Image (cartoon, rainbow, N blue to C red; front, side):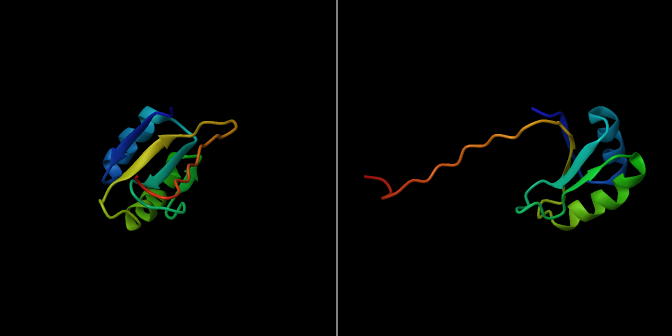
Length: 84
């Protein structure tokens, strides 16, 4: 589980970045299809990345998240027929 912080502005984003470290992922809290998501490698990239993430967030917040390296695994479930 990556370290992360929810932020709503640049000052909070800078504090979060100090906590999670670099490289980091900046992404909208509630967007889909990776819209507004960026990987950053320096603190200088934070402002533009956060601005983009907040543009795609209906909650007005974004996540600054630790970037973990390695394979990703996910599980997807499909339910047919609905409740009985």
